[in-house]
Length: 393
Image 1: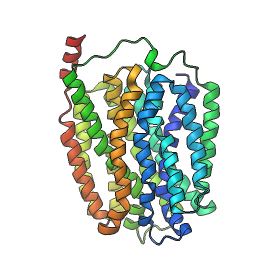
Image 2 (image 1 turned 90 degrees about the vertical axis):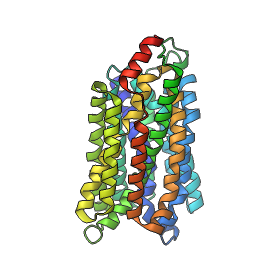
Image 3 (image 1 turned 90 degrees about the horizontal axis):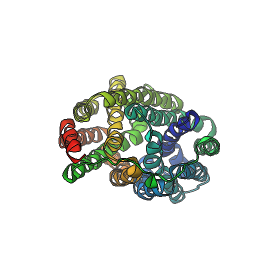
Image 4 (image 1 turned 30 degrees about the horizontal axis):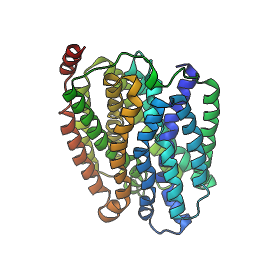
């Protein structure tokens, strides 16, 4: 992959996550503009975006393999940019819900298409995935920072317009620099990765189940952290721009974990690394539930490091065990199931916090992390995988 298209693919990951979190960061300002008393009452209206982010991955992945990944990435850049600008023109909760749902549909394209396109000829896929993950999470950090500043000085609508224009510009540059595909991935002649059926099914089930619990934690934290920071630092920090900067710092620090994990994946077995990271989440969420002030902030940095650090494993398993000719379709199915289910986190976030508060939410996340750890224990070991591949080879 030439350098400029590769950079644009990483930028696409950043934009993908940025767009999905503008609403959560600006929700208080949007609620006030729409005449809604509590921000929690507005959160369920964004569930359509996250649901489509999941289920839209199936057709996106299929089109990526059968039609072409370059073409689908152009649809992504232009579509998500225009959808974001459309959000800025909404005037009611149901209008913004519809526009966000369309935005979510275009956002579904990136993960099953952009990541396989980026790693399809990579000699060190773990590093490539780690850097790509860093880019995606810096998009989360920038969502907190840019949205906080744009809301403060220009209003919440510009928080959607500015990145929308950036995405359209990125799409134009991608169209000029990305190599034309000689054939769709599904039609290329490649050496297929073979695993016994029982191990292939077991590995896929672990990918889907761990992806679901991981996505639940990801959605609960990234959509709730800004409001949680506002509550836990009440009396210490209140300015929206300052809150945005503090939240951006959390995500920027945590994002480095993906690069480190990516390098480790290339050198060490997946299972013990994965288990160690998800096991740490159990303790960190439990401790955070009983803290406030700057101690909570330090724990938030720590638990976001563990949440972001767990992300590369699903993509790494797809690269390691799934042939390139069908990676987009397999990724699409995995993402559709895990992200589709985890979209419930966005729907539940407002009502749950309104009824029980953030302390109970953090305790619930500790329990979800425990379920994740149990799921990872079911992943076949590296030696078992290697032996099985030699036998089938």
